[in-house]
Length: 183
Image (tube, rainbow, N blue to C red; front, side, top):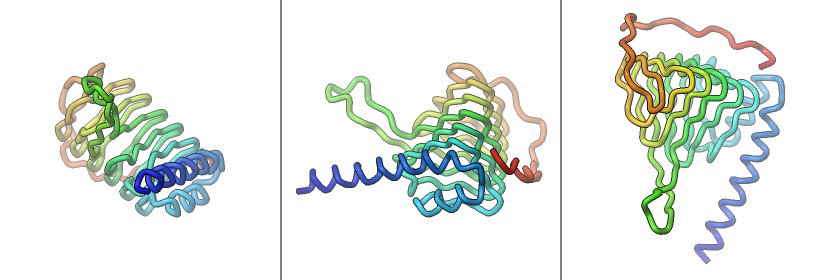
């Protein structure tokens, strides 16, 4: 019986995920945000999620205030995903908190939370892997694959992501402003 209930729950969330993909094609932040919140995503005031975002298990996803998520983002909620305030996430960023243990005979799934603190910038097509914490004010370069924690105000890039230098502004207090209406 437990196995049947688990399978029904999985099917339910697969249907929700499919419907959220459809919602992602609606060219209005307000309408998309309404449906994302309805599915369980916590979205702070003034935040925007651009079109074509993909969600896995939305109730575990929390997005702070004045945060912008770019087009075609992948936000994985199989474990806790916490995105802070004033975070600027570019196009096609993928954040995963679930993966497989390649050394396990059963290829078992392993989940770990991802935390992205305030004032972080994540460049286009960056990939954030399970269990990573990105500190306040950090910058992740375009195409980087983040496999380990990133210190506050660090600028990282590459595959795997490595420290490039530190950000000079150690006291960010900017607002990202309004996102484009039809993105």
